[in-house]
Length: 127
Image (tube, rainbow, N blue to C red; front, top):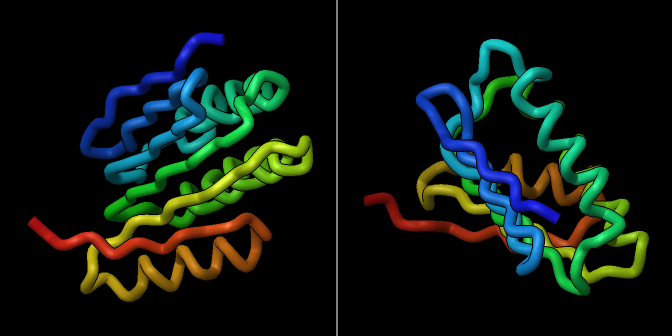
């Protein structure tokens, strides 16, 4: 299966999904004008990937900011990952936040509760 790579912009996150390694990275800002248009290819890729996922999948989510409509699609990404978990694979979400961004840390904790996926919530030092 092909990797999924979408270059990040000022309004859209970078998507770097490596099919073979199982490392799925989402990073940057997510405030796209058309959230469905941006995230739909990501969700379709994950739907296809579920059948071919390796034994261990790690989603590395490192968003500095995202809007309300993006949060709905992040939940959809987590639902797709939960399907992979239900297929017997090992799935881990690594949620990164800047160490002084308590709101983003709490958002990660909320997503962990809602998704039922195993999370590591990781503080990163600001540059």
